[in-house]
Picture 1 (cartoon, rainbow, N blue to C red):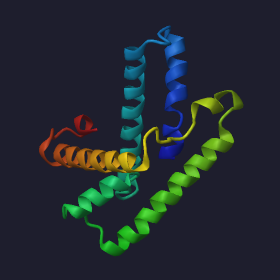
Picture 2 (cartoon, one colour):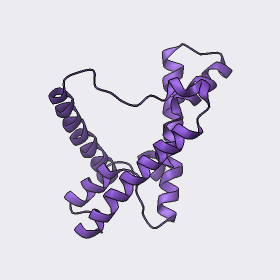
Picture 3 (tube, helix red, strand yellow):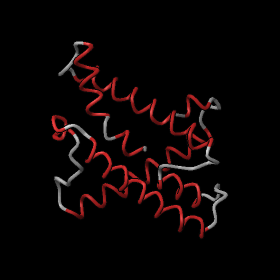
Picture 4 (spheres, rainbow, N blue to C red):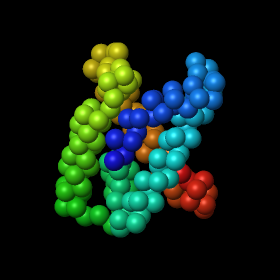
Length: 149
């Protein structure tokens, strides 16, 4: 559901910006997208907590395990990662089937505009930085759950 919903952020941003009369302006569109992401993370964190601590982000799962802050065992991670990947693939397939034809051009997947080595290095560095920031926010950041999101 996370992948399914996040695939609609571009479409929803475009529709909301058009309704608000700010279509084509960078900062209002960025604000709209940020609010949509915030609401999505908030909703899926509540759903995950209600389901006993499920997670939609394999990076967070791996980070917490590597830092020794997870209750998962190595065996549960071997089950969780493929389940998260299968859920992501299912979300993409569902989105490709259900999206109206007039919005198909807005949901193209990612692609590299650089060589593979540069892309892999950038992905590794950004994953490390994001994981570090998330761990810092969770354990040293604000105590308010809403601010953490």
